[in-house]
Every structure is written in structure tokens, then in C-alpha cells.
Length: 458
Image (cartoon, rainbow, N blue to C red; front, top):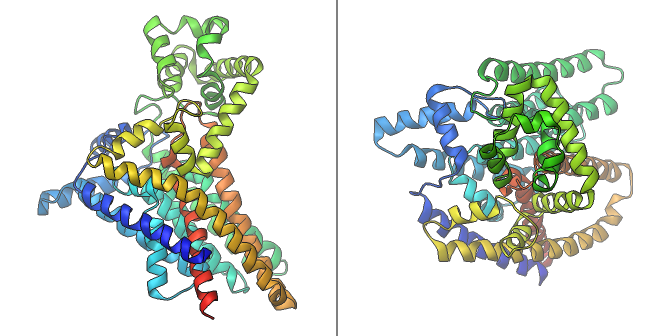
């Protein structure tokens, strides 16, 4: 019964999502960063927060538009949808091989995860980056599940998707490194103590791919090319801790910071979270240089945190919960719970062409997502109870250990994303940033439904 409910619930999501996709395929969502990427695709001036690969893809899309008259936006949508569907298929086939109908149904459930679907039909890199992360994780499990030695080719395949993801969004140099590093350590500990050549080969692969990413970013990025401040550690803490309390602490900020901000800049900073770095941070850096600016950012962050620690921690908890469970938290934010975020703007853009359909699609996912996870947890408990007998013996235990290690990789990847985006700034929760976490939850819940249906028919 629970398995059937899972399948019915996701089938409704799939229908709503495909209808929304068809009605919005010719549309254009006016995200601020969309215009930034379009401009970069013309002048190729990237700052450290912009990867070079997505502007290159936009350039090719405009070439196709010139040749065939198809809108470059539609070219990007088609590419992103195709890659996302393939990534979902590859991930599901890796973690739970099944027949074509079940795999297609699960892939469509992941494709129509609402936050992901909105990104698939947007001129933004989040869709392709999420797909690269899913493919990286799919190859990670493919390398682990056989229980054989981790070959150099296995590690290189995983690292290819790390490379592509990092060239799409620079922060994936770190976020995408989690599976690569853990698979390297797994091979080092389990299979290579007596094989120094194999250790050296794996190390060369990891260092080479990291070097390519760093080298490409160094060649293509220019500091402050897009008019945004540098996102260093202290700058992130300055934004994270000080934005929501700036109107209360501004008078006690260091005099150097207050002197370089005119009244208009102060108002801009207080009004919009992104302006903590775009306006205030940039002004401080231009006035005192990067090194002194770092010190001043740290002073303001410590001041804000010392006075409003409970409030700041409460806001951080909302952001972290939003990145882990984006559909229900986003619905709560739309109802006035939590605090400021980008959710309202994202939702407004999603509703632009089909408000009634988008509203039903979005809010349905809010309550269904939570219910699906509860049912999946119940089914998973039953699967584990059933599998206890199969885990006796060396082979079963070894397989269980590899599965546990892979689950650990998924957990650390999700935790890393959540911490990274939670700490990047206050008032900046953006569910587009961690759509891969929502897709992983969807894969788990939909797979549980399929497994329950198969179990029932056995």
C-alpha cells in the first residue's frame, strides 16, 4: 500500500511538472544572474564567482540560433533537460538497476522535482552543474559496488564530472571534490597499501584534474570583472552575520567602514542581502585594499555575532533546513515563516506564464515531498529488516560496507553543500543552489516505491 502511494504521488508530480515544462518551454525567466551570464558570453570577462564553461555554451547556442532560427534560450533548455534526464537515468541505473519503465518513471520523478525543473528552463548553470554532480555520484557507486580494486580509469571518469562541474560553477572545485577525495582514500586504504605505482597513478589523476580546474579559472577569471566583491571567508561571515542586524549595529561598525560608505550605499546595503558584498564589500576593498578589508570584515562579523548570536543561529538553521528540505521550507517561507530569502523572487518567476499551474505544482511538492520521505523511511526500515539475514557472511557484510561508504559519500556531499551555501551570506537562501540534494531525496523515495512494488509481486 505504501509503495503504491509513493508511485501515485510521484506520478502526479510528473504530470504537473511535464505540463509546466511544456507551457513554459518558450518562456524566459528574468533572473539577475541570467543577464550576467549572457553578458559574459559576449565579452568573456569572468569574476571568481563565474565559471567559463556556461558562457561558452551560451555562445554556441547563439550560433545555433543564427543558423537555424531557434531561440538560444530554447537550445539551452533542450540541452539542460536532455542532460538532466540522462543524469537521472544513469544515477538510478547505478544505485538500483531496474527495467526501462521503472527507470524512466524514476528519472522523470527526478527531472520534475520542481526546484530542478525551474532550473532546467532557466539560463543559469545550476541545472547542468546538478546533472554533473549526479553523474559523478553515479560513477562513484559504479566504481565501488563491484568490490574490486579502484582502477585509474574509474577515478578519472569520476574526476571528469568534477572538472566539468567546477568549470560551470567555481565552488564545485570544493563541493565536487568530496566524492573524488573519498574514492581516492578508499582505494588507498582498501586496495593499494602494497601497490605504490597504483597510489602514484591515482594521486597524479587527482592532482592533474585539480590543476586543470585551477589553471582554467586563473586564465579566465578577472577579479571584480562583474562588479561584485570578493567572496573570501571573512567577507562571507560579514554578509552572513551582519546583514539582518546591520541597521542595529551600523553605528558601532569600525569608523573606516562607515567612512567609505555614503548614505545611498548604506541604504542599498540594508535593503538587499546581496549588496553586503556587491556594494559595502566592494567599497571597503576599493578604499583599503583586500588585506585590510579582510580585517574589517572580520571585525564587523564578530561584532554582529557577539550581540545577536541567537538570532543569527536561528536564521542559519532556517537556511540549512531549506537547502536540505527545500520544497516544504520554501512553502513555509512563502507563508511568512522564517526570514528574508530569494524564494519569493524565484516563485514569482516560476509563476510568470502559468500562475495557476505553477502554484499547484509548487505547493503540491511542498507537502508531498515531506510525506514521500516519511513513507520512504518506513519502507527503508522494512528493507533493512528483510536484508538482515542476507548480511551474514563475509560477502554480504563486504557489500553492506561498500553501500554504507557510498551513503557516507552522499551524506558528506549534501552536508558540504548545505554548509557552503548557508555560510555564503544572510538573507540569501536560494533553493536553486542545491537542487541535487532534492534530486537525491527524490531518487531515494521513488526507488523505495519501486522496490516495494517489486517486493509485493514476488
